[in-house]
Image (cartoon, rainbow, N blue to C red):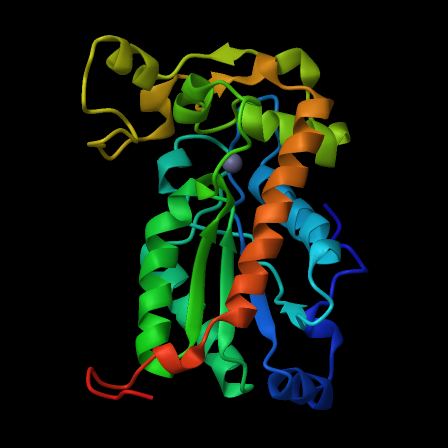
Length: 273
Ligand SMILES: [Zn+2]
């Protein structure tokens, strides 16, 4: 996806305009994604396309009094679980954490103290959680951990089983791609890819890939094709509704980040503001 020219990109501003945003107590948003295999029906850019598509759909929904700038997206993420498939580009956990700490430090140096890490890739979850805490400690800034796939899903739109087991390249991601970047979807390769998790759940296991108790998995463990979920449930209309729903949630998260009382971030336990 070509980054939208209409987004309020950080890199399009000047030092004086960044300083003005800092005075306005703006929110900075960093889109986080991955460039990794999503089977033969979806492109390597799927997570990046979805992240930017949701940001683009969220921005027009923001309250007028919420100044926002969007940092250059971090296209690459932690994709070790997809390393067995050609095309996956992965950072090491060490490099990725260092990158997030460096970007956060630069944002803090500019005087901006509200940062939303908006993530579209499951493999980045632990990284985002750790980076948010380290940046909070180092810069006493608000760092929001926002993963769209952790937002409350729209009721009744996608079956609970598919939400639970269609972790990668299933109905949800395929539908959103049919809406956001239909030219990149290979419709003849869309199929039902049943996850190992479906069989474990059917056998009554508490343990599952992302169950109450999970385990470290490689994509090929869940399905030999590297994707899992029923992509055949996806269509463009479902994608449009999902994008609309998750973008609305993201807009509310950005507004909540703006409204958050920074005095709650104390230097010491007894530092009552
Ligand atoms: Zn994905």
